[in-house]
Length: 173
Image (cartoon, rainbow, N blue to C red; front, side, top):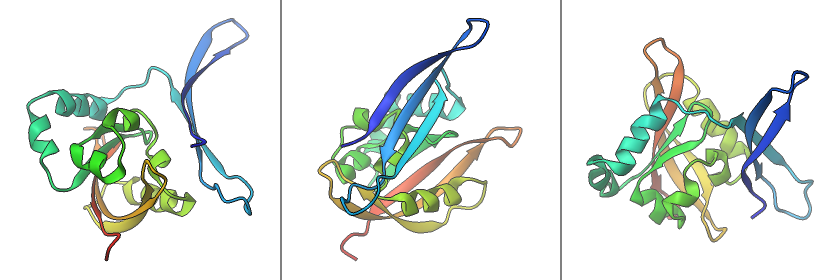
């Protein structure tokens, strides 16, 4: 699918100290009449934050069965835009097993750069949830139009920690 996911690159400084970076490359145009457009997303290879810990509890804890029964697709992303939680409705909506989505950039699910812009502008700051439309790409390559709303999460000091997105298929609207 043209996606390069979770490649670890190690950089060495002058003093031989190494820094490991996780790199993901997401293609946003597969049309032959267009120049290729890619988004490169990188983060420290060992980065974890509090929303990731909460999401891990939701994946493995007693909340799992409740969240998996929710009619709406729910997805959580960390402050760097990496997916840290998906419920069963996301799997049904996109045709991916949850393990194929977790720890990948949410940008890999988006249909084009305009959708990425809409998503970033909608979750970048703390505010009340509002609804907007995005187009996601299913595992079979088909586009699915969704209505999404997001609630940002901030740490006690006000630092952006990620967001929780609720999504519903509106393709047939």
